[in-house]
Image (cartoon, rainbow, N blue to C red):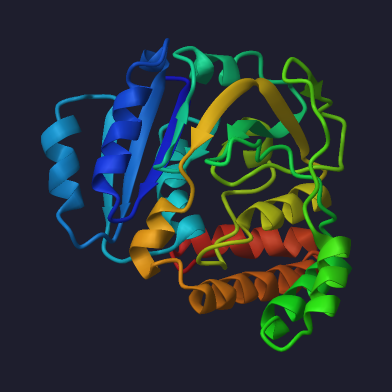
Length: 295
């Protein structure tokens, strides 16, 4: 098999099952190894998946003893696939699916040689596209967002509008038949589904593991920019996203919990900017931590 897929499950058994069953109907799916990482669910998820998919050779179920969060949980699947010589890997949520039975093969078809991250055209529950995301990702904007997030309960509404107007995500009008140039540096892609290619893994070993949930797409952009890894948006491949299914199950999408998680991730992003003054040292330590299983 040439390509891999990682699906992270947390408590969301039925939704994940439906997603995998839809994947198995995709054209050329026999070329893919599918890894389901159960992220410390305590509801019999592993047995549930083994009963349904255990006899299918191209599906691997990897149980994790505790909830590692988004990045570390997906890294379990990434490491497994890379150990099996698979370096083009689709990371996808358990609540997202292709709108066409050829979407998967289209997304992997003719991967540009200089691209490290590829995003499909993700349509949210509101019917609007989530990709590509045009948002300034730098130390200044991250610092502003982190302060705003921490103090949002105390900031007057008038000031909130001012901050949001300077930092909010804006979408450009994109013809669905067009593709954003892989040479463009002014966008990144939603974390619900994206491919990391062999070009990414030549430089960066996996997803940055210092966050639990939220802001991972921005951190991926920070790393990619520093290491000159190009993005590619494929507008022709559509996916539907149910949005926030696992987070709703894990903590009910409580605003205060979400704010704390976002703040922690933004803090890690700010630390990462400092570490990227010495990028080679960062990667060496990262790889050593992976080897020692301390990350």
